[in-house]
Amino acid sequence: MYKPLESDKAKPMGQGLKYFIETWGCQMNEEDSEKLAGMLKGMGYEPTPFKHQADCIIFNTCCVRENAELKVYGNLGMLKKLKEKNPEMIIAVCGCMMQQQGVAEHILKRYPYVDIVFGTHNAWKFPEYLFQAKRDKVQVREILSDEQRIVEGVPVERESGLSAYVTIMYGCDNFCSYCIVPYVRGREKSRTPQAILQEIRELIAQGYVEFTLLGQNVNSYGKGLEEPVSFAQLLRMVNDLPGVRRIRFMTSHPKDIDLEVIRAMKESEHITEQIHLPVQSGSSRILNIMNRKYDRETYLDLIRTVRRELPGVALSTDIIVGFPGETEEDFSETLSLCEEVGYDLAFTFIYSNRNNTPADRMPDQISDEVKHERFNRLVEVVNRKAMERNEALVGQIHEVLVEGPSKTNETVFSGRTRTGKLVNFPGDATLVGQFIPVRITRANSFNLYGEAVEHSS
Ligand code: SAH
Ligand code: SF4
Ligand code: F3S
Image (cartoon, rainbow, N blue to C red):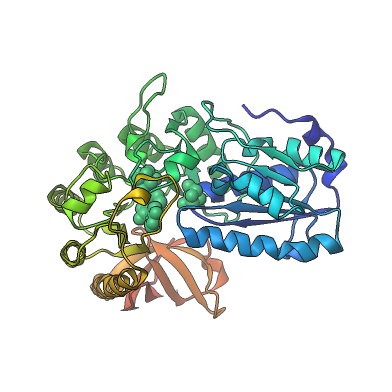
């Protein structure tokens, strides 16, 4: 349990001061940033959208691919001038990059105006670091290699009022050969169902209706808990909480998703028809070298089962192109798999070497030119299939949870279907937060357009 620290109690510490947090990477980092914001608010700080107005800047970093890291370094360089103007400003850098050997030291040396660095296992100690940096005017650094405990009860400052991410497990045990996540996020640790349900109840009381359960591999949820609970059981427990309207979850590793989960989805009203099943490659040979523990045929069987059991299900995936040793033939198997599955959404990535991962040391690294050329061909297939899937929805009526006005036009509102698709339609502010039927009138690869249908609620 998170206990308020001395520095928390010293409320005036942040009174009248502002913070700015920039977050790169996945929802794991988003969640940590929400906690950091919660702690800063607890100390009296207020948020600002402008770096130059901030008294405390936090960069929460990601290192899953090289370009994520490059962005962080670019942004760090730009803080030098701000710090010169406001020497009292505190700059903290945290997140996955800090867990890589030598990175924290490098940052403290190369960017001496950085005051605090900490890793992914101890974000909850941030108030202590802030207090120390301000009091002693020294660079504060604490990186832990892993953490057995899960610290519950850290205050959270969330942005939207309808949909919330709820982390159910931390870390990853899979060690896919290209991936750095297990090294920077540590071993799998599941939160207890009690803690998860309590958090969701509190969110419901604040008006949240849609919940996305998060973990790097949610299907192995429950391992190591004193009273073992499977992911399927957890899903059913969340479904039974009064006030829950929609449940999503990610990520499902194809090797671990089982019939129990599919049955829970089928039998539970609020679990939506949407699954993210990262395939990574369509070639069994490459999947083996990636250490994914399934092959093309098992994956396609799984897709057939899911489609049969959950009609109308939306399927999304992650794909890597240019993994070491990927031949034109391997790549064409990825293309044909995409043609065959017809994903609603696919996140496509160019393989990026990550230090100290097995794939980094593999022979036959693919040239940038070939990677880019394959990437473009893949994007063409993926977008065309997504377009076909979306066009097939034209004429249908879907339940949409209205989120708010669209970014570009105040009379156009947007919301999501149960399957997670973004729909734009003419509307007004009274609809925000409601579930309304919308007839789909038009589609492209990424969005749907529609019109609200008269309804009685
Ligand atoms: N736990 C999730 C995803 C975590 S990272 C899963 O297993 O699917 C999100 C995605 O980033 C991965 O699915 C993968 O497609 C991509 N990715 C991870 N490491 C990468 C690397 N070194 N180069 C390119 N893409 C990578
Ligand atoms: Fe990375 Fe694989 Fe774990 Fe996903 S399952 S986080 S890709 S090691
Ligand atoms: Fe990036 Fe860390 Fe997530 S490396 S993708 S922020 S777990």
